[in-house]
Amino acid sequence: MNQQSLFPELSEATNQFLSREQHGLLIDGQTLLPAEHKTLEIRNPSTGLVIGHLAAGSEMDVDRAVHAARAAFEGQWSRWTPYERQALLYRAHEIMERNFDELAEIESVDMGAPISRTRAMKASMLKMILFFAAQSSNIVGETLQNGLPGEVTTMSIKAPVGVIGGIIPWNGPLVSQWWLIGAVLASGCTAVLKPAEDASLSVLRVVELLHEIGLPPGVINVVTGLGNVAGAALARHPGVDRIAFTGSTETGRKIIEASAVNIKKLQLELGGKSPDIIFADADLEKAIQGAAMGVFANSGQICFAGTRVFVQKEIVKEFCAGVAEFASSLRVGHSLDPDAQLGPLISNQQLERVMSYVRIGTEEGAELVCGGERLGGSLGDGYFVKPTVFANVNNRMKIAQEEIFGPVLSVIPFETVEEAIALGNQTPYGLGGAVWTQDISKALRVVKGIHTGVMWVNCYGLIDPLVGFGGTKLSGYGAKGGRAHLDTYLYTKAVYINT
Ligand code: ADP
Image 1 (cartoon, rainbow, N blue to C red):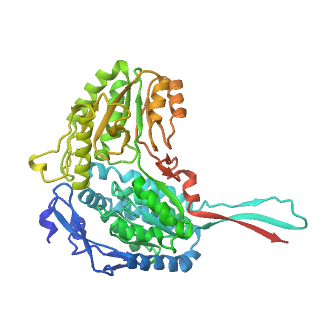
Image 2 (image 1 turned 90 degrees about the vertical axis):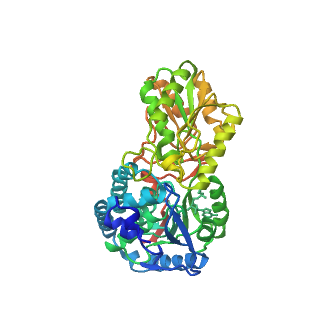
């Protein structure tokens, strides 16, 4: 297929990459065909058209990749100094910066995020690489006092845990893969990455670029394929020491079970149903835009989307009118339309899931204020849904309890701070949350009262690698970012030296 004619608006580099016959596996620094010669179709979510084929990795491929990762872990890579790993990360920063336009285009075509959004990810990605570059030369153990008789010197040293299985979701792999790659390179671990079947291309291209700047073969391998085949094989492989997983709570449970075989260490970022609490004294204009984009950004396909918007009774009417107006003003379009603010959903399956929740919401008695329909016309073949607002939602309704992963915002009225906290916590999830008020003590009561891994005050969705975020309850465990992140790629070894 000649992609050149399909994407005349894209750069030559992107078209060259997209026009490959098949996107193979990356194992031990080489592009390989999958052992069973099976492939998966790659669809452009903006048009529904097949734009290429992806290697469907099998258990055998995962095994090959894990062996390559193990050999690299025990080979030359283990003798790289912290400075050498740091220098590799600086070179990664340089090559990612230089090739970012291509990477953003690949991501937009592959997973549907508007090009304005993927281009704006540049700063976040580069910041993450710098964060991990700094950490690679900052791994410290301790010398410890002891009460042992005689002359015994004691210390703790930090060692890389080994082979990491990185299971990556489809909702923004261009940046999210760096939580893994950065930590692997900084710590001296090695990895097998399993990107999501619906969005693997930016991961393949990033790892290819890393090989161009001297990433040793086998340090980072990529096995594309189905979750229940390649992902499951990785999760149960006895040669994998740790799994970092981002995805649904349901899959997270399967990974926990599979990991029992060799007691893998786990980091799990799972589903969410995050509360966004807006008090009557908030700056309403900012709260409307912030809460709306807290749900609609990436067409609602963000784990910590603030989908339950609790609004204090006296401003509910005004808020609903404002948020509906804002939602209707958002430009939904083809991912390569430079003016599009929102793109399609990832797949037809996701579209059907979101539309089924719109029906459920209406049946449950919530009031559909705007949206709730699939877009037609020139967007009719893509997986587009209008930004949707439901008012008069009760927190017990399905649309307020289950993760929709689409542009669907539910407005739930409340009266007091205590009620807002109680309702906010009535969910099995504990990922994100926000509060909008000009009263700092009220904000802090909510911040302390809500059980989630991250809280925002008068903003939504800000993330910095230095600070990080994480989840609690059914949203998982193990923070991303912050000082704790790299620690989970290391283990502590106590050393007793009889001197
Ligand atoms: P979603 O339902 O939103 O697609 P998933 O949790 O299924 O989220 O997917 C997240 C990642 O987990 C993807 O890379 C997917 O391929 C992978 N995955 C899906 N099922 C399994 C499984 N049983 N074991 C391991 N990984 C899986």
